[in-house]
Amino acid sequence: MKKAMANYICAGFVMLATLIMLSSKISADPDLLQDVCVADLKSASKVNGYPCKSNINITADDFFFAGLANSGNTANTTAGAAVTPANVEKIPGLNTLGVSLSRVDYAVDGLNPPHTHPRATEIVFVLEGQLDVGFITTANVLISKTIKKGDVFVFPKGLLHFQKNSGETPAAAIAAFNSQLPGTQSIAATLFSAKPEVPDEVLTKTFKIGTKEVEKIKDKFAPKK
Image 1: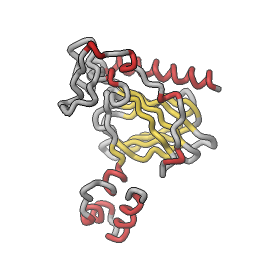
Image 2: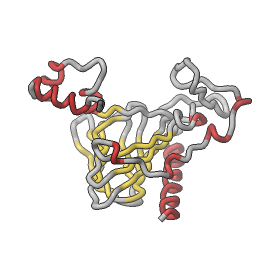
Image 3: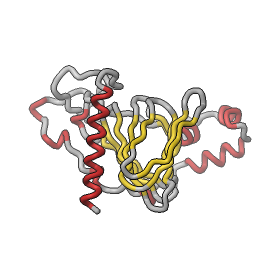
């Protein structure tokens, strides 16, 4: 089982390499102007990325992350999906390289709710299980498909998309992005848990529901005490 999982994770990295080549001319992030620019994550300066730390202080660990080998804990999520990112915040050596990965684990019936990545195109590779996936175009057309172990699906940059486990067993996927920090906006959480709060009137008119319904939804997204 471990060997099979390792093989699929390796395949995920091959997929990432392909994404890098395809996106080299239209990279979401600016091109680098040096061999490496390992992120100084402690710096207070944040100008379109992280500043570089001194090359004297660079180590192999700046380019390493072991976190994708382990399944995420889907029991700790309300929708039954757990995302483990491998972005510049986890791998400082990704700074200015314009790529990153995530692992997504899904419980049975688990959902990665509708969301967008404002800074990146995403390509997913199914490690285990079966997923119903889809994205919505700006013309409100749903492009969807059921994908299984070994399949690949692409979500264009900035478009609303989702993944749901439609199989009878837990599922897992590797997602690759052409950005070191693609960003994620989950639509429901963004609207109903923003601080300061989005005015109720905006939400009632948007979703054609009453104020009481809005407050109930906000309560569901409120942090657990």
